[in-house]
Image (cartoon, rainbow, N blue to C red; front, side, top):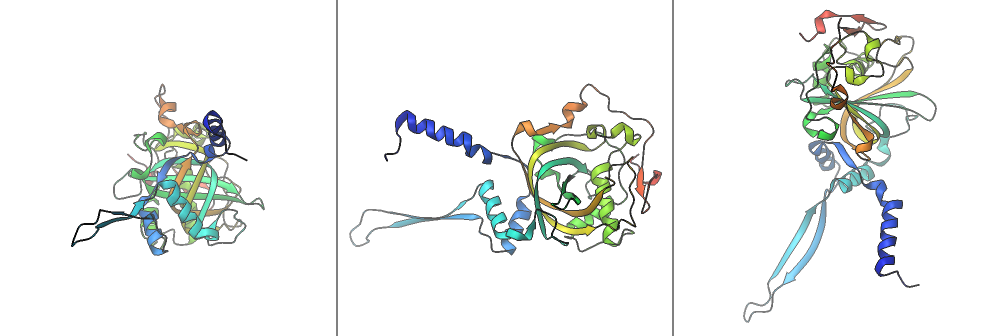
Length: 315
């Protein structure tokens, strides 16, 4: 059968784009080039397309022909991501029935973005949070800490949201991420305590009133930037714990879900979104509102409940 030509060929190509290719047209809300290249280098993953071509000049008497060659070309982000995922393979956990620890994790769903205040340069970090359920029904929360400069503008990377409550564990978490999960000399010196503090930062940072004022309205909290639905995320994991339910009880008047079973802490390689329709930028929701809240709520976990703590407030 002959291949279609002319208008029929163009229609077929467009139909193929609508039916298949649109699924891969995505924007990167977060991209950590340095971390990706570090992982690629450590695991022998080539991030350049080898192109071998030669151009030969006409033969010159006594000299002969001259040859010129080009050997490499940088890959686009989609191809880099594909190679990383292919190389890591099953080491990246997606259905969390696999017991801890996971070295890498990935998923698709809503991802929340907020500034993270734990680094040496305040408000230059970003924390991303997502939650999912395993095929057995366990709730899994993933906290990803990265650099604000790797965050795209369209999800608020360049925005300056208001401030609010900041956790006293923020610097501990920042050092833990910078050391790739090897340093924790803090009072939260066991994996579960550290995981709970990380999740508290991801879900409660920026509170400036009672929790009821913020519930289901993340744009009313300080530091929050926006969220993206239907987003693909891929992260390197440094801590992966299943909580002891006899040890931890979370009230409903806080950001941590009472039914959380497992918490992961890590660093994102990328987050990619299907387009602008999937992104809510909180800067836009704050317009027309002064965003002020009276009576700061300063949550701190004592192992079981949320209490007020003035020593962690940003003045």
